[in-house]
Each structure stands twice: as C-alpha cells, then as structure tokens.
Image (cartoon, rainbow over all chains, first blue to last red; front, side, top):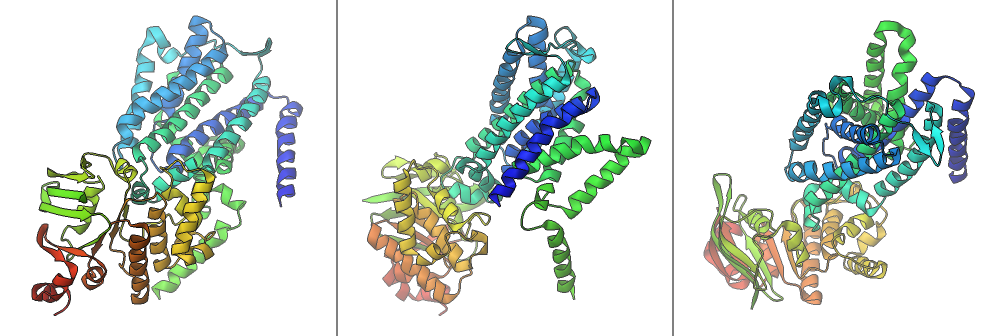
Length: 324
Length: 238
C-alpha cells in the first residue's frame, strides 16, 4: 500500500511539473499558480476552523494585509520580494496576536463576528487611505521575484517556485496536524470541557491555531501579490472569505490532503465550466452543493477506507427504519 | 492539616445564586464525599474549585495558597485534577491518545510517559486491551475508567470525581469505587467524590458533606451520617 501511495505521489508530482511545460498558455499558468496560493490559505484556515472548530470569516482581511504589506514595501521602498514575504509572515504573527487575543478568549460566535468586522475594516481602510494604498486603483507594478539573479518574470516560472513552497508548507501543515499539537486543536473542537480538565490553557492554544492561520493567510496574500503583479481592495471581500471556507469544507475538514483537493477543485472547476456560458456559476454552485450532501466529509473521504458515499445511503436507511 | 479549604464561598450564575456560604475542608489522605440531590450545587462547587467558576465571596486555598483566582489550567498544574461527570473522553482518539492528553501539561520524557500509562493500565487492565481502540467505541464503564485514567496521568495531588457512578451498571459502579479506594490507599492521594448515589459514596468515604440547594446542611464522619435518621430518610430511601 505504501509503495502504491509513493508511486501515485511521484506520478502526481511529475504531472505537476510537466503539464505547465507542455501547455503554453499564460492563463492556465496563472490559474495553476492561483490554485497553489489558495492551497496555502486553506491549509492555514484549516488550523483554526477545521481543527480547532473556531469559525474564522476574516480570511480576506488577513490575506489583504499580507498582500498589501508585500506589494507596498516592494513598490514604495523598492525592497526585495523576499523581504516582502518575511514582512508578510511578521504581519501574520501580529494579526494572530492582536486580533486573536481579544476575540479567542470569548466563547461562541464572537470570533466570527470580530473576524468579519476586522476584514471589512481592512478593506475599507485599503479603499479609502488613497495616499498609502492607492485606493480602488490598487497597487500596480509589483516587481517580479528574483531568485538568485534569475528573475521570475512569467507566471510559469512563478508556478514552479510556488510549487516548491506549497510542497514545503503542506509537509509542515501535515506534520502539525498529526502532532500532539494538532491533536489538542482537534480535542478543543470535540470536547472543550475535557480539554479544560486536562489542565490545558484553551485560550492560548486557540491563539496559536489562529496565528498559524494568519501566518499562512498573509503568506498566501504575499504570494498572490507577487503572482498577479497588481492588487486592489475589491478582491478582498467577505465573499472571498466564504470561498475559502467552502474550499475547506468540500475538501475535507481537518485534513491537509482535503485542503489541497478542495482548493484545487474550487479554483479550477468554475473555469472548466466556463463553456456553459453566463450560467456557469449556477452550475458550479449546484455541483458544490451535491458534493456537500453526498460527501459530507469532503473529497478526501473518496480516498479513505470508510467511503462516505456508502455511509450516506446506510444512514438514510437506518433513519427510515427507525421511524417505522 | 487541611490541604484544600473552601472558605464561605458564594457562587452565582448571572443573577441566580447557586452556592450560599459553602465551606468544606479536605485533609491529607482522606476520602471526602459530597452528597446532594439534583441541582444542589455539587458540580458548581467542583467547578469553582477548578477555577471554571469564580466565587463572588469567600476564597479557596490549597496548601495555604489562594487558588480561587487562578485559571483552570493553573489549578490543574497545582495537582488538583477534576474528572467531570458524564465520561468526558475524546471519542475520536484512541485510548492511548486520550491518556497522553492527560499528560499534555506535563513535560514528561518518553520513559516517564510510558510509566504513567503503565500505572493506569495496572489500575484498569481493560484499558490496556483496548489501547488502540477509539474511545468513542468503548462501553460506558470503560469510558469512565478512561476518564479516571486520564486524570491520573498528570500525577494528581488531589482527585475530584464528579458522579463517577452516573449511568453505569451496578457491578461497574462497585468496580469504579474499588478503583477510587485503591488510588487513595496506594498513592495516598486525597479524594473528593460528588455523588447522588449517597450510600455508595458514604460507604467508602471518611467524611461527608450534605449539600442542599446551595447550602451545606450537614457534615460529619460518613459512618455517623449513614446511621442518622434524617440522612436515611432524605438520601438512602428510608
């Protein structure tokens, strides 16, 4: 089984490397790179919402701050994009603490409320602080990433860099999910009273999970800025936050593989459906709904032993049996 | 010398007062039971000691240190372990993982961790057989054993059990109380038991407090209370 898995992984990697080379279309390259960016952000969201069960609706604001700090330092101060990435990580830590500390000490829906509020404030400030951010005109001419003198001036080149970054981050995320740390995150979601009885500081762990989410989110934002070369505040709406939640839920809550599958599907599927014309978003929504109903544990459950498609029918049978 | 002292605490849930001037003491090495009907405030008292509720008046000291202003995880850090009612285990984790969660706040080496796990298995051999099984698939009695075992993982200096007999078959209840007495005897750990099953709790404890709608209405050596007509009438069915 292990060998099969490794072979499959190697094949997948080969496809990911070869496909963009054989397919010379900038649109496809941008789309694939965008998928990689989304994977990073969803993996981050997974820590706080998927594992720890705290609803974060502010992904767009987090991503926006990461994108803007990277884009602004690179354009205004002319510093290297690598500094931009570093600052995005610092920004992530800062948001994690400043926003997480007050909101995660509260129970219930308060994190959803504070994160929505945060996200909207960020968007409004970015829109209206024209002298700094360029307002709705956005930030133009974000420089290309320079890799030891080799300038990544096409989205295909960026794609390969991001592929490496995503593999590293996915490995990190996977290690965290399966560590003692990740287990406590899940325990907080499943049974907060028992965690308390174990002598664990729940508020501290929630802040840690949130900080992981904000660091991944800001990093994703910076990656987005350097990929697109142009950002503006209209991208970072609450719709975007909801989109990331959908990616996480359809992919498989709590699972890194699920995050990757979900981000890939939700990024690529609408584009594949474009041939349906003006209604493509309707068809996409229907497909997403069907997945939510028939694969409640996400796309990842297609690949695990307990296939939820079968479970769904079984559960339905049991229910009707009980009623009789 | 009493190691745990609750000094005249009042506890409120919003505007509703749940405890009125409650004082109890737990000495070294003894088993103390707190009995009372539903809604008497037994669980509230436990949660206040654990730092989950805050007393509006009065304080709680542990070995002379005031702990009623500490957060729950710091209270556990002092060695007070609370085993909540209703078998609060982590259903999606294996038995072994559940036990390891109990030691999360301790910086054990691998060898120390294994030793603690072995101690729990010695107390409840059934858990060893089920070490790799998901906790959600265990029977009610086994889940209660697991909850107790998880509490034992952090080397408690004082153990508090909330309704350990809740919803268990009588034969399992006996087993559970035997285990509690065994923990008390072998580890010299003082134990507080909160129970509706007054007879069981009083028959294994040294002293008993009787809690009624938030007031302590009686206390004394368990043997004496067991024979008192009032207690017999109210809690032991005549």
